Length: 179
Image 1 (cartoon, one colour):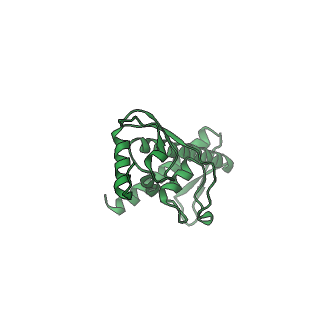
Image 2 (cartoon, rainbow, N blue to C red):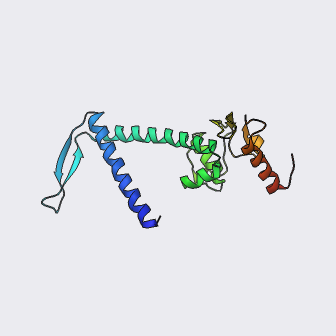
Image 3 (tube, helix red, strand yellow):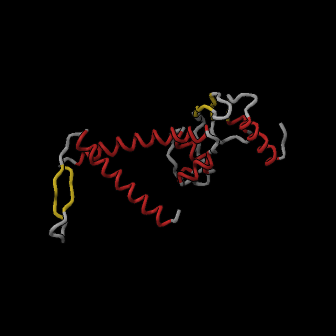
């Protein structure tokens, strides 16, 4: 897919989201719209919300739902075998020197918004993500990408889980260590 097509498609999606926020402001939060002339044009008008606070409420609702979806899709991606580094790369997070996977986990699971000014500062308490492994079907506790060994990061996989065994084997190959 060409970069131009992606940008055009993203712009169209953003326009549809703005339209959805406007509709939520009207339909859910009860404001009305007014057509106002666009300066310099005689035919074209723009729509404005009579109560901009309804627009703020609608945008806040959209943001809250989107943030919940980010977390849900990140858990689904982890369950499907994607790494926190891959998730972080998609998010294009400012990492402030922290590995991108750690920044993604900090944001989506711990609720710590990436802040380059707080480079290297981390809370001692780290929440965990929970998801069902698509390979072994077991509930996995994911403590994030902070430790080296996969067993220190994820617990709950079945002993026979080929995905987890492959992660451990890749770790052993990368580090030269054995279990």
